[in-house]
Image 1 (cartoon, rainbow, N blue to C red):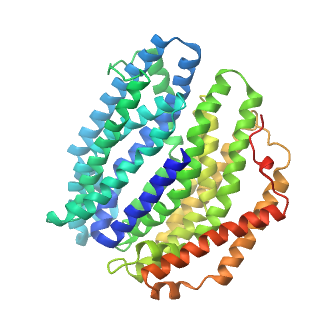
Image 2: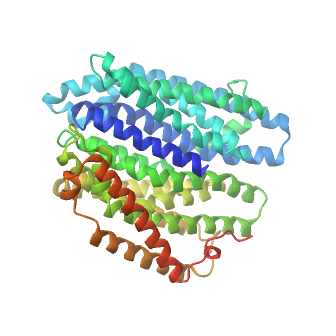
Image 3: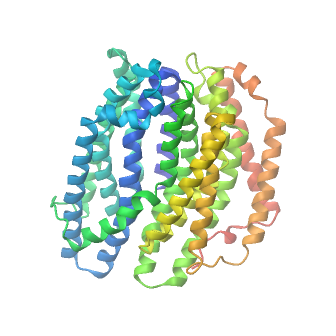
Amino acid sequence: MGAYTTLSRLLGFVRDLVLAHSFGANAFTDAFFVAFKIPNFLRRLFAEGAFSTAFVPVLTEYQTRRGSADLKSLVDHVAGTLALILFLVSALGMLLAPVVVSLFAVGWVLDDTAADKLVLAGEMLRLTFPYLFFISLTAFAGGVMQVNNRFAVPAFTPVLLNLSLIGCALWLSPWLAQPVVALAWGVLIAGVSQFVFQIPFLAQLKLLPRFRVSFHHPGVRRILRLMLPALFAVSVTQINLLLDTILASFLVSGSISWLYYADRLVEFPLGILGVAMSTVLLPRLARDQAEQAPAEFARNLDWGLRLIVLFGVPAAAGLAVLAGPIIATLFQSDVFVAHDVRMTQLSLMAYASGLLAFLLIKVLAAACYAQQDTRTPVRIGMIAMLVNMVFNLALIVPLQHTGLALATSLSAYLNAFLLWRSLRTVYRPRAGWGLFCLRILVACGVMSLLLIWLAPPLSVWLEQSLWQRAWSLLVWVPLGGAVYIGVLLLGGMRWRHVAHAA
């Protein structure tokens, strides 16, 4: 799963490189990112967020304690009911596209010069909104496979989104009057292809659903009961990012794009570490809960947290220190100029400071939902979102778009801490956490200082050719990783300190 997730994220880099070089960071790209972010936000809310965290534990319980007939009945009725809800939401979103865009880009409504952006975003939203329908059904199929320990196929499907957007950007955009609209077509094509790709694998498991609608099926009712509060709690980070978009619509053109590209770079380690770990842990923790094995539950959670800290801290430090060089290498072009690089660098550094918290939330939230506890994350999510809004309002004036990114990071740490505290009754950290964290901090500090000292300043990177920047980055990133691992080994760190306790 990690390999396919890495492939997807690497192609995501290629995708964003193509977008930045083809379209830059301007009013047109702002319009597309708003049109894409709205259904993408709902996808994470319905599919990767609330639905998956409610569906997987119930499906695991059915598979563990019930017969195959009950399991198939649950799959059929969940598929049909989910499809009906998604169809209605998607149809309503397409019908009210201009209104929806106005709600998520309030600043454009109040700006007379932004009327074209509003119209363009509304047109593209009508193309991107059906993506919610298809990608949520894709997440349903992925949940079925994860419970059956088939992680590779769900991890591979995002590759199709990246390929679709790259293809449409390169080959469809020259044929359209407004080239950026090709990206909206790419999103729609990706949603359909990702869903169709999953169908043969469901058939292999003999769990290809016959779509049946029923809000009275006991399994469906349990999932809906767990899902409704989880709609908010599990996607607090995404809600915060969406609030950033709303507030950024009041700032200068390009602000939404700068935040988007920075967020995409943070999504790389977040996807490889956070999403992959929570995806693997959720069915395992749900099984521990169903089998009433609290000791194994605590060991699995501790193992997941150690891996997150081991890899998350250096990833955050590396992103922050090399933010400028990474952005210059990937995105700088004739339309993504040095000013765009510097603005995106600032937002990436702010997001990177919260990467560890984003990762911890993925794992800690999975532990809560494995226990079918949705109320606690809801309460914590509400607190975190309110705090985020306070930070947003306090930081947006002095720091502009960077303040929005920093506010998201600060509120994420509060979210992670409160989630950890809520699990104290079921989780006690294994011995050795203090020394474990000290070794990681020392190794990270040495790595960061070395990169700051040896790597050339951003002004030098901006003057280099693309190949010079790429070659330099291929030197500095592995060097930083090697220094981090070397200092850990010299400090006495061994694999047994993070290995899963049997």
